Image 1 (cartoon, rainbow, N blue to C red):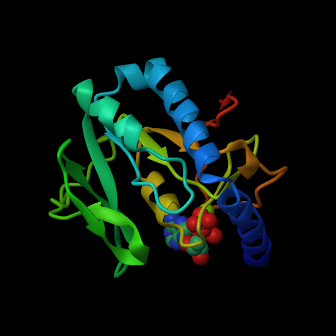
Image 2 (cartoon, rainbow, N blue to C red):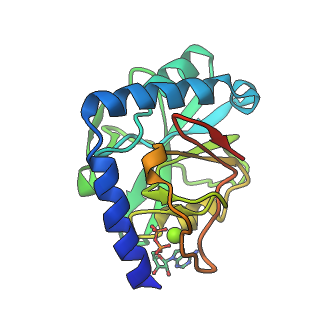
Length: 188
Ligand code: ADP
Ligand code: MG
């Protein structure tokens, strides 16, 4: 299973990395606009947004609009010792720095200690690959599987359509998404 996943991970990551920067940026904008128009997003008060890393779908514009709409925004912080995904609420003027694996994190995070399953209305999830069953392939460390299994929120995967594959191999711990938004469509 892990071999199947890791082969697929390499293939799909290289497809995503191969998207020219201007294409990635235009497609990210389209994905952001689809998300922003969703009734679920409009209704949401508290969202969790990953800070884009490498060739991931860019989430910056989404956070800008969310703040403008008065929403609360939190971002993930990895805890390698556990290993779990923690989070910190941010301000619209938040400053960031590079954390583990060179992923951006707030310079002065306020890590939530009273973790609640119903804390977020929407969680935006990065992914390496997906299929029509809304199964997700991550980077292979399972951080989001552990995090999402404890959250009641609407789980929205943001992806480029080139990351779709016929069948993502899954194990019992793998968490499916509520929906996936690509530059072409919304998969529910
Ligand atoms: P990813 O989802 O990042 O692509 P995997 O699904 O292959 O990665 O998970 C990576 C590792 O994390 C696996 O060894 C898996 O056993 C572990 N893992 C994932 N979720 C859990 C969980 N809820 N409890 C314990 N281990 C988990
Ligand atoms: Mg997984």
